[in-house]
Amino acid sequence: MKNLLSDVVVNIKPSGIRKFFDIVSEMNDPEVVSLGVGEPDFDTPWHIRDEGIYSLERGRTFYTSNSGLMDLRKEICSYLSRKQGISYDPAHEVLITVGGSEAIDIGLRALVNPGDEILIPQPSYVSYEPCAVLAGAKPVIINLKAENEFRLTARELEEAVTEKTKVLILPYPNNPTGAIMERKDLEAVAEVVLRHDIVVMSDEIYGELTYKGEHVSIASLPGMKERTILINGFSKAYAMTGWRLGYACGPADIVRQMTKIHQFAIMCAPTTSQYAAVEALKNGDDDIAQMRTAYNQRRRYLLNAFREMGLECFEPYGAFYVFPCIRQFGMTSDEFATRFLEEEKVAVVPGTAFGDSGEGFLRISYAYSLKDLKIAIGRLERFVKKLREEKK
Image (cartoon, helix red, strand yellow):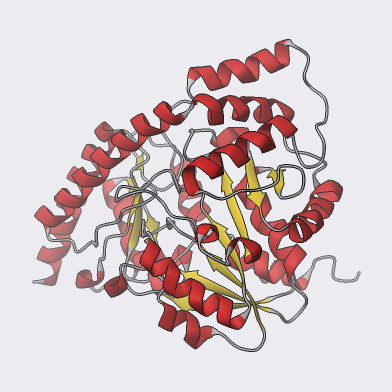
């Protein structure tokens, strides 16, 4: 029998995040505290859920247009106008997708030809590199540095550009590091992008979760809207992970081709979720503010706890992750995370799940209750003390 499987797919590594999630599931131990999954512990606000329920009661259970409900696309345009000062045409420059993940996938497939290079700063979200490979492109990794707070510098970008460079993925606020890019950082990157005629895919799913001023989109800078696909969604800001809804905004020519792929592969995003998302955008600002305040409290608690136990960790100003350094213990990230889970029953994710430059770090999510975080930190303090005694 011939080989039944695609070599490309077989050679893609499984997600490092899911590895530890699966181990926790198999342990089936109620004492395990998991800080590994980036999912808000908040319920979707009731007024958003009510709108979803109401849409079902009204029998709104049919396909929407491939691009999504026009009312939702208009609300997205209104949101981006008031938040970022960017003007999009809801009829031609907005596409509603099944989460931000679908937008990443079809955006890359719409942009690249075989052999084109996609620049991917790492550590970063686990989907970028596999999606680049599946699109037939060559991923080119830019290894970010802790001393730069894991921000992408113009110099690092310039050094990675070749004549085959087509797309730069810009993953900020960043998962897993919590790093942000401020306006001055983006302006320096934009200058390189414009000079080399590069398209930017800006993943801004954590844009509402920033703790140092307002998030700035690179699409808002002069000359950048015309070459940027802005990706966002409802999972993180509105605690709507299971609703599976995202969107992409960009030049009409690009969005048209993305819609074509979406049309054949998906048809349309979930109708109920789209009606709920209209309500989220209209009346969800207060919900975001309340959740952001809670996340910031947890963020500051973790950073203070790390300082007290002598764990090095730069201060992250975005998303809901911290990225402490564990190099002092002479262990790999995977070894540390495995032992921590086995001996103290706390699940975290090795930094290497997000790229080789994550070696020596752990991703810890604070999208969990303060109660769980305190339990986990108590166990981490005990574990760190044990490791230091072993080294004596």
